[in-house]
Image (cartoon, rainbow, N blue to C red):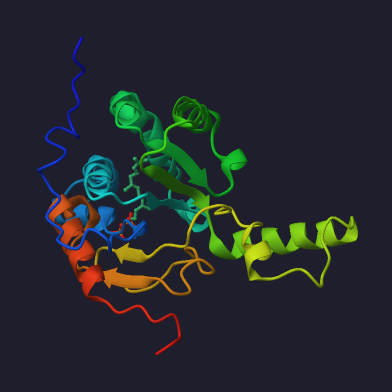
Length: 253
Ligand code: FPP
């Protein structure tokens, strides 16, 4: 039986036009901003923008796979987003289930692994269940790592790491003398992941909004005025092209 792969079809030819195949950002992080404004401009409720944004996620997963990006981290819900109206929060919390219901077979077929960063335990049961199921089903895949930042806040992450470091020092599992940047990184949600090479933020805003403050120390930033629901594989490709023109010096000359 041949399986329908709606968003990976023609995967070799469709979007990969990069020339410098050695200089692909391994890890791309995206702040998917502008859903609400996209909807309001059309006289639609804000949540219509989130729904459309979910469909864009599928396109960008495809583009990332086609371009041999290894990790795609998407800022899906921040610790501050709980302040939004309950109806909007509830809507966003249903999207992972909807997304996975539609696309999990394709993701599995295309070797994508699903993970999250953030306070997973505090998510609604139905959101956790859907994501945990997808994590379990994809845990042995070694293609693109699709990493949802969900209930994620960077300052909280760093405080949480500091508390765990202090506990481990008290319990003599760690010594203050050996603690360094590498060891500290292991206490972050991103343990085991390379730092992002490229950060994309849509919608014209140019701030980090408590996203990956430690991990973005040497990341290249790329901003676009395009609202997330209008973001496309082509624009993603443009960002990768521009990344390839950058000279990364990591503080050297
Ligand atoms: C920011 O736009 C966007 C969010 C807080 C939600 C992001 C969620 C998605 C893109 C869909 C999630 C998809 C999956 C697959 C689970 P905003 O609402 O702050 O926009 P605004 O600045 O125009 O108000």
